[in-house]
Image (cartoon, rainbow, N blue to C red; front, side, top):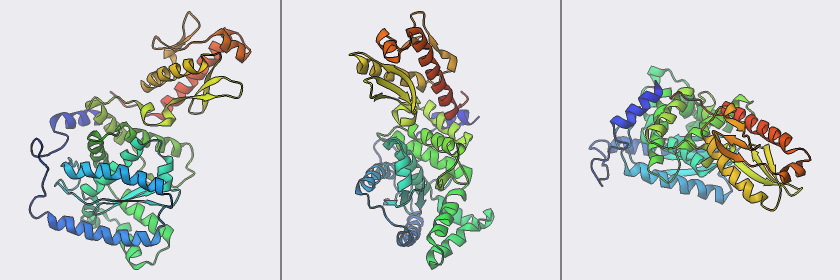
Length: 382
């Protein structure tokens, strides 16, 4: 249902409402007041957050976030994004991006275009594409004026945490941890599922106009959910009370498919990518998410391993069934009838086993990795 809705949304309407070819959208008369109010409120929030939170002392990390953020902000300010929830008017801001000290895997958006990212999230992200997915999401919250709508509807929604957060920040009476928690609750979990999905779609629109791969938005959701399910050991911040839902992932997948964007997770996330790791015994070992698949020996070991990595990534990106990895009559490993790993006598000698036994062992490793892979990705209906 969500996938069908996503396809209909993309096919029935343009990605951006720009007015006309080459036109830059304009702010409609009377909207300037709302924009100014957001900027003033955001500035006050930001001043207090800056007093209580320490800014990173890593200039490279800060420069990375500013570079990606400013690229995406320029796109948001040059196009009228379609808002499925929130203020549907074109709302440009002068965006500000800051990195906060701390291990929280967290990011949040204040009114008026003030975007904060914790060091923990930057370290957690496995590519610029994944960072862009979250920044595009946060920019969309600001562009769609979600906090303003939240404040307007606060009595209706009975959001006690919002006024408490405002009092704590402006009066300075709460410890840093409490302020951070209240900020996250009001800016994160206080928003409805519709607002989160609207920000996902807004972020997708921004990324479609950028050099970044929108699949990064999906892989970030998947990894958050997987790691939390395996046992939360860190503060999840933005997804504490509203983790990425199946419906949200299904919607993002629908956007990708409707836009004919291949869902190649290996391009945006190291967790979904095979790698060649040289071993101390001179072998070129292929690993997937830390799991050893096969060791290549001989003078051409690196070349054969590199070729297999490319084929394995393409195979895994298709989210195949475990049984689709098999042994061929020639004793090599195939995936959907495509040769994945050629097993030589040199490989077997290095492993100190027969070529047949090594083939069975490597096939079991590939199938085990496939089983784990399938459990980690969203199995969205098509």
